[in-house]
Image (tube, one colour):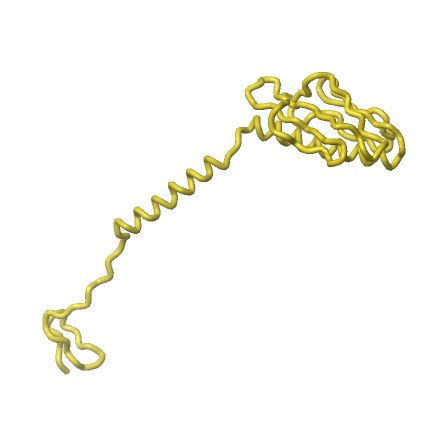
Length: 165
């Protein structure tokens, strides 16, 4: 059996490779281009994430506005179902719904303690199916966040609108 002169081993096929032929050991690591592509993907992902993050005070005000719109629509539906007038008005630290049955109370406080309703606007929510155009403006106490309006034209449901009139 012939012996390989390079490493002294006999191949399994019994054929000795020509001298000087060696199998190259696999190289470990990454190429520069692969590293640059990965860094570019990470940079783009970080940039998109930072753009998607909202200011916490703005998101807190938006949550309170969306919640108020849903509560106003709930009270409006209860007013129509019961056939009694329901009014919403802001009070210190929250708001009240006047005219609703005590069996189904609605929440009376803001989710964020910094949220306030500007002015003393009273919203009439029914019992008529068509009500007049109405709006309430929500602001944070620190006034660094733009105000939000929760409004209806009388036909459509209450919805959140950016900015105050």
